[in-house]
Length: 445
Ligand code: SUG
Image (cartoon, rainbow, N blue to C red; front, side, top):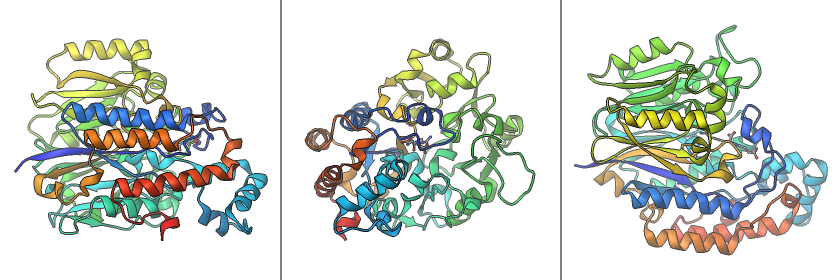
């Protein structure tokens, strides 16, 4: 039986914009109010998927959400005889509120859910828990539709168990796979699941960042591990270094990435790096820790270049490729570090692939944010909606679809344009047919 890692990227939605909604995410805060190009964003994301597909990697995609969120406008008391009036009233009341209800943030599917593959779970099923994303209002409104999309994508309940998101309270703040990594020798063997959290909710005076929020709690990670029926002896928890959260590392995937028996991380990533690495090493005969020192790459360079928000992918020859954003090539310290790294044949990373996802990057979303990983064997893969797996022809249809429906400019003021909602609805209605998703959006129910 063959086993593969699939990457499901978020298809970037028609309302992609820069509203500075994420306190603690440096790029989001810095690029607030810039004019976005949703069409280019979508095409950049699709190109990354196509390039990886062309290289032989298994590539799927998850549908975007419909925005602005009309149901919430109503729930918040913006009444009117039609949606144009409700959108106008919300904008007049607060452009920031309308921006939150209009965000295309569901594109960052690393935050869509945590997924545990079948070799890791006691019942041998693939467990999926959508993230509750409670820390940010514009993201806390994602899980309901994300759950529907996940169920229509990972369809066969013989293989997939879909859980509800954790309770929507900050004690159980859960940001999904952005703080979760699975290590293993071979994809089909029982793995080690590694959860990184920003703070304890229940323990007073425990280490926590001072300036920016810690979005993931240990309690949330533990609840996911229980739901997924993981083996406690193969589950590791580590606390993020609060000092780096305060420098813009709002998820662990901004400072570390792992694949199989390799962890590529910054020396300041964890509160107790030594202990963390020891607990991982104990469970493997051979494990590669690639520690990047502050003298080689500062935390600030890591945050602006998104070196660690890369995809670490296994190549057929047993080596690994690191898929980094263009911003990593632009950063001298990072690029020279990477050039040296690939010369060192004692570690597994032999190739660096550079991708241009600038539109997403300006909101703090690099290559790794844009994808949700799932390890599947051949039978399990047949339980996935086949229309959500990238092919050459699906790529061609989605490129034409985006060019037909997406704007090339979107500013904060334009979020109040009622035509934008109409365009979004039309595009997504067509998309549900292309991807054979049935009815997933509120306007279709
Ligand atoms: O949650 N940015 C997202 C970026 C998510 C990146 N994901 C991972 N690291 N896995 C966030 O902060 C910005 C939206 C705005 O400002 O308009 C935003 O939501």
